[in-house]
Length: 397
Image (cartoon, rainbow, N blue to C red; front, side, top):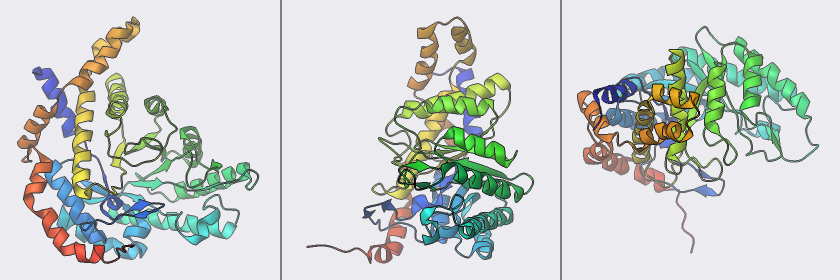
């Protein structure tokens, strides 16, 4: 049983918790080896908005959907009006805008770091047009991930590429409107395996600081080497007021995009704890955009997304249960066992009954996954989409 204070902490945490859905998480995706198609997968931005609206309908904490410009708005600004109509129809609005400077053939040797000035300009033009889309849709955050790097020693001038990136990111920052942010993401490897131009949080931090005050760092939980202490990175970026966003997933080895909490739920809990502890110590709300970045190749896409959101809610509210005054005293006296138990006790708490109470109070179902399964939505979209989705399946004797 929770005390009134603990119950209030869970309710307050849930009242302020939002996590963004990725449009690409509802579409057929795969690995470098190929795709395993799903009959109910979304194939258009209209279907992605419908599916995202369904997740928000049952969970109540996913009011926005991240959009990838080339995948969702191939005509750029000309597609924005249609997005506004979809947002109004499905009850979820456009969230972060994600430029794409990695899939076109021109970017074989990079985008902002490409030795060809014409290609660098092409990439910059695309990102600046993405800012215009964000402004039209009322989206605050521009999410920047670059595949730039090299595969072999000596094939690229690393320092020169750094300078080109600084120039490009400053130009992007100059195009931001008041109130907009650019979030700089990092990744240590893949698709480049010798070096990537933004390989870790320190590089992303330096690039963001060089770009200007509206630039922050974006952390993806899968974009780290094994055993790296992500919550320490979070603590440092919070202290520097440079943590702008999170892409949540889980991984076994590298950037696996597994369901959040499926491998290491305690890590996600520790990340949320550092954020909430910062807010408790400073009295300031951490302005962080939470987003799911998962592409489910085997799990049913909508079910996996509801499962993910529910898990995120549980881990966030567990972190809200940490007795921070008690923890501060234990830390000050170096009472190691007791300090650690402040986290372990909170993590071990079963918050699901209180989450169910909160959900019912908001007119939401106590079990969102079961409510979705009972709704018949999956059966309807499977009937609508399966013939189209499975038409390209090839069988081999």
